[in-house]
Image 1: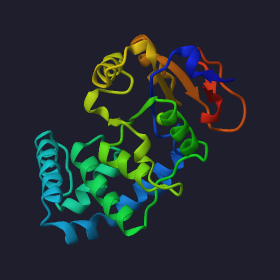
Image 2: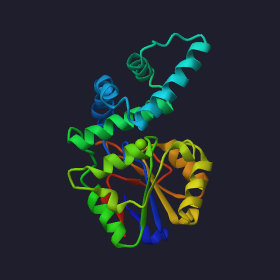
Image 3: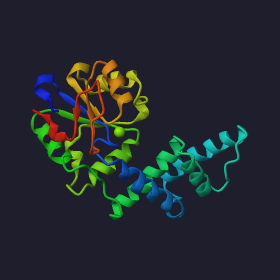
Image 4: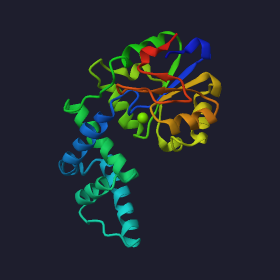
Length: 237
Ligand SMILES: [Mg+2]
């Protein structure tokens, strides 16, 4: 199946990351384990940096809330961070700290952002066509910029007009997509949102955006109320 940008009168494209531009495995097999393995070293090395101290302050606040709520979080900050990771807690402090650890990893070349091979040429094609491309992901804006800034195909941030994280709201909330449309200044029906998650696409459609379900895995395409693309090559002019 293909999705035609001109048929949709699309002026902007908003992309999900995990499972859409980037293998889900990159996040779970590379990024999360890297952050876990480097927490202790990072805190030791960067304890005097403002960004690190801000992240730790957020973590200490959260720890205090857990304690007063009757939970038993470990006291040392490294152990507390691991404890949060074990619980897959959506924590601002944890996200902030992970972003900083990854930033060091990308800078040193230990980490490199991964995207599917059809992504870089599609981003270049859309930019040449005058379309504005944005990212909307539950990872922090910093984490998003790091992924696209360091891929094997080079720095892809040159093709991206802006980034949204859950600061605009949850990805399954219709209001989030209204806020994104308002922020980028393009009417909702002229924005195409691409994701691998039905609930996100349903929310975007309820906000009157156009949608495409990205199915990266081999095998059968699930029954979908949204047009299906297997790669960005299927999103045609
Ligand atoms: Mg996804």
